[in-house]
Image (cartoon, rainbow, N blue to C red; front, side, top):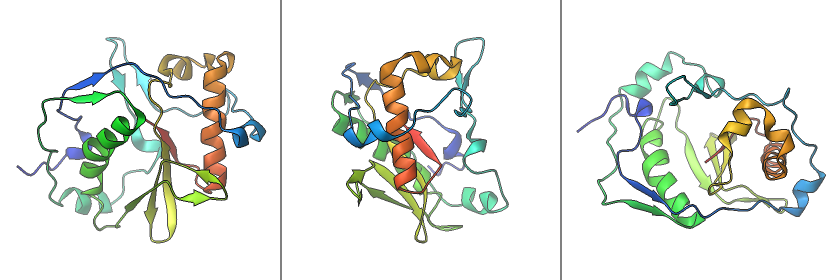
Length: 185
């Protein structure tokens, strides 16, 4: 069944997250200046009932081409018994099938956006970058259970060394790939 508003839906398949954690110890990231609370712009927040409200307006504001894009057919990913997220590779597969595939189905034109994975830029390799024409418009990293959402949202991340390292790495990728739009998953 065609899903016109797939960009506003969450994946339907069950996830079993084993809790294993990624690390972030890239030697090149040590030279990157840390991100301060005043520099970090997060557009996601917790609402009083405990749910997370994601605000995507910081990435790309809605434009007239969104009407054309939403008119393109798209379909939910195939049903599965469950996803077992144990390794970073498990996370990457889940992300590509449950998140990227539905989103890119809306970017086959108006404009077409493509995904490239793990392309080396001067010895720095980001997990994902999305390309429009020859321009990188979004970069992203998979980090298994490393992101401490509450510390990022409440601004206490500066006191957590793992979060400081994580943000230095993400900032380093943004600098190397010349792309200020970045995500962590």
